[in-house]
Length: 91
Image (cartoon, rainbow, N blue to C red; front, side, top):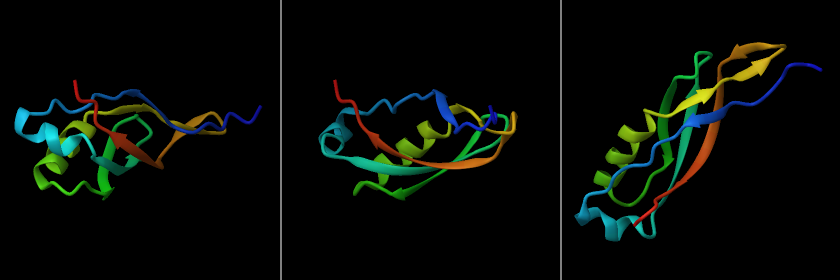
């Protein structure tokens, strides 16, 4: 067994949307690029943002709170990158 695994999210909150942004979020899908550090913390950027700047800002603020189990190389945590498509759950 090589001990190599990819990073996986363990804490992944989704944004709480104010009422005035809900109509934009129904169709909104963003693509976020996470840089996942060995401690599981992240840096994140939107490589494909939504059409709404306020929605993008809210999304980035929330995605910065995600936490990952880091990628492993030969049994040791390593930095990695992962692109994740983010959909909005509208209740």
